[in-house]
Image (cartoon, rainbow, N blue to C red; front, side, top):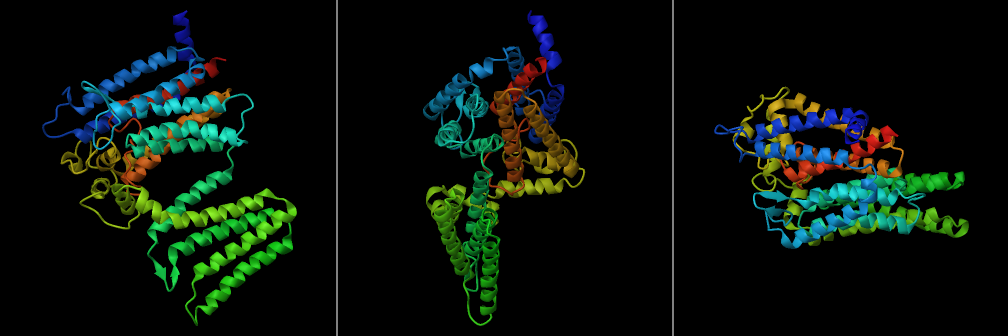
Length: 481
């Protein structure tokens, strides 16, 4: 019976995804070796990081075998138990873990260090899939929204208490899963707008054109534009829509003409139009009893309130090093010898690779250890220096094909549980890819996000492997049916 079961699994497993996985494992290991290679390096040095990573790869293969041998219903039945177990482990880590590089996120067992936060990803994906995979579940009530968000935020809070903000932000990827399963696109729009408001408010907070504060004007124009679009779409009175559009254009045109004779604060013009538009929407909602009009008004109020709160949150809530990292990423300050050192050296390493790269183990920036954490969070700079633009592009293409394959696997699942879990897996890999590459290129703040299967780290590698192969086990059951 076990032999027949093994044959069934081997015949039904998705070997295309397995091939992607093996390519990234081999590619990643050689990249780690290139990043840690020095003149006195020994590939067989048992204390070296390449050898340590190889041991974790072998352990992961054993775990893969165990996962594939488990019954198809194990993960569905035990999803909540796994989630609770990992949450308890995260809580224990807060009190038991020693402080390493400013955080308490590693449990140390002799020479072995384990980071429970890496395993919380697949546990959270299972719990979310279990809850949302219930029969007739829909994201159409406050209770359902609150329950799902609680499952996502609980591990985030535990990880933040370990002082691992970067690892906690990964769980924002699950909101892509919620969007796939019916979350309103308006909520996603609010999230995107919040990020844009935050960036604009910080970057242009001190920029004034004439007497107009540029940051406030840009945000108010965004709010006015979005509010106007929703108003015109929802309002069936075409004459009123023409009047609204004409008034907005006419007021700004009059302001532009008046600015030739006097100093005009265009922000106050935009703000006045927003207030007038909101009053009109309130009037419509009272006469037509249309809830969407009130929601648009609340969006405008939230946007303006958030704009005025950004400075307080940035100065009073964020830590000093987080403020500096954000300012460096936004180009507001240059700190090449401090917080910005890693990113600057990473850019130098990637740029020096040129089109074809310097060759395997021939990167000078890598050999001379100019980039700190070049085998972990900044592993992509090693690819850029040794393999150039071509090698970097191939890596990105490989990851994109891999993620698209995960989406394909998710869509072909017959059960809601497997489909939702699959989208959770794809979202986590996508989040890691975008944030890590953006971080290395200086497009995003440095928050310590590893590149899956490439960055050195046993817990990270094992966590990503478990995350992936649970999906492959679920998919193999679908194929057998």
